[in-house]
Length: 366
Image 1 (tube, rainbow, N blue to C red):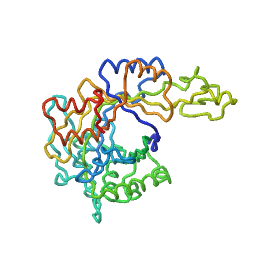
Image 2: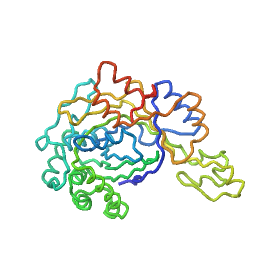
Image 3: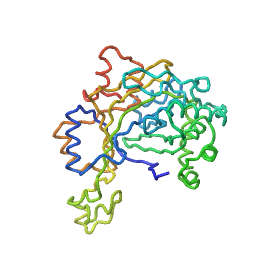
Image 4: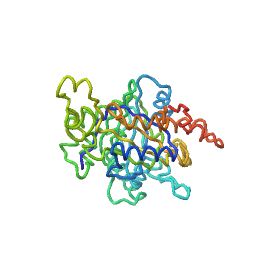
């Protein structure tokens, strides 16, 4: 398979935007970066969070401890999201345009995948049956690649580790089969054995296994879906003209820092901006409570809002700072899973969800 980034360390700040604010951010990114929507374009993303039956993981997270972690599976594309939710027995797989919910797909008795102490992983037959039902529901002929990862946050820094797995391998691994066995049995079709079983991948698998075993038992907890546009720098020369960047001891190429300044003067004055800066816009943000058998997908934010997430490993470039200040766009304490968890517990009473979900009102949802 194509190379993908499996390790992240960066600061991630979220902002809730109305339509006017979003247009302002996009214009500034287009002119100031220059940035552009990446090669994937507008993409449907479905995330399935696994947690204890009483949701101890997210309950601790919303208390804002110094360290917190979450476990999630993620699929890119509408069909892959349908397959993911169906295979894990997590609930209605998609929200239809007319608002009519699909019924829960009955797979393996309709029981959610479960990992528990001393429990046996799904058998090969159970994995194959779930995968076949999921592919039929999604209209796919081959199992999609999904990402299983852990997201950690410590002192404001986000650390992510993730693995690319076929859907059957993800089912087997999450249910308790060792990673190496799951990969060998259901490898990614265009991936090499050396890649899937490389030391780095095995280390991430050990981290994921340890995290899962800390929170037993684990079950599907919440589905989160949104439409995303991700913006990135259009070219390496986006940094030309910045003091200390481009040809003067700054960026050598896209994604690569030259940390050797040409002089002490350069070292003192040059800013180092992250060439991997990303702006993501998530709209159509909905959640599904996997603990409620007949629960529909429900909105987290208003239909005309979007969540802007700024992901950077370094200082913001001046054009971004100026834009945020000019339009008075401030970060909000917000997580998709945390917001869905609070909405699921407090309920949607009239317009209450709008007030709770609208982080532009500076309400804290984390």
